[in-house]
Image (cartoon, rainbow, N blue to C red; front, side, top):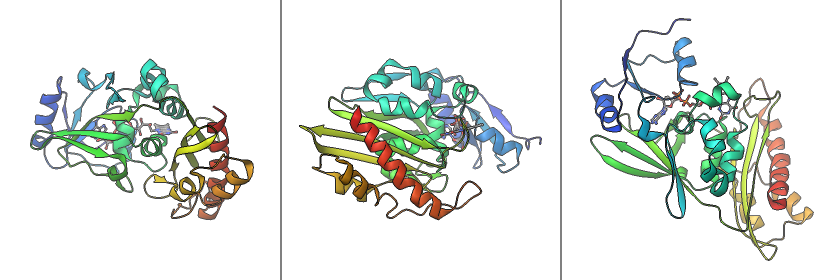
Length: 286
Ligand SMILES: Cc1cc2nc3c(=O)[nH]c(=O)nc-3n(C[C@H](O)[C@H](O)[C@H](O)COP(=O)(O)OP(=O)(O)OC[C@H]3O[C@@H](n4cnc5c(N)ncnc54)[C@H](O)[C@@H]3O)c2cc1C
């Protein structure tokens, strides 16, 4: 289908983009890689008055070292993120999960920030951001800079804490230092498809015992969720087979998985237990 008509604005600096967004009207939308927004326009599921295209705003694309964290620019593409040396060294879970997103064509256009701002519960990266306690960096012309922890960012189904005139400029991801293992376990029916369920986990052990563990779940509710019941049960344990099995049985606690043509809610509740065990096993082997 042909999208509805809209004004098209193409800033070349962040300041210009921030000024254009409120001026373009209440229903203006930011365009990043267009991999989610353009299909919505073509299906006429979205009717923005204007699109503010970030493609020429180079300052949003960089990935940089920020002491005990790295900052991934909002418009860094999935391809860029998964090959970036800083990401691979300090946030390998991000690199691994990003490599499972769609196919090379989508990964060359789709952006890290776009995936988080779109907040699709089936998207792989929101659960990863949540598991890693990432912090969203937002900016608007009226309010200046704002930092939003991932746990407060995903508010509801495809809804974030971003204000209409706010841009996601980057994401601060704490570095995983020595002793951390990580894994992203994604279950999909065909290669390069969306997750039916996904589990992102990072585990730090000291002398064999779990010192810290974070688990984020994909497609187990309207927003990504932390498997806190599992995390609590694993603290101090040695991740033996028995403990893993026992703790993973709580992976679905507090979740509200959807039922759709790919699987029922009950199926997802079972699947998440199996995937959590697999993810923890793989993470602890790293
Ligand atoms: C065939 C196909 C398969 C896919 N498979 C997967 C998959 O397996 N896993 C997965 O995770 N994703 C998948 N995706 C989605 C892909 O990851 C997209 O890149 C992502 O969802 C959106 O990123 P984008 O840069 O294209 O954003 P856009 O489509 O440009 O924008 C999406 C939304 O985010 C907003 N937005 C974008 N950037 C910003 C910003 N900086 N500040 C504020 N708001 C912003 C836009 O206004 C819009 O509402 C798939 C997409 C396609 C087309």
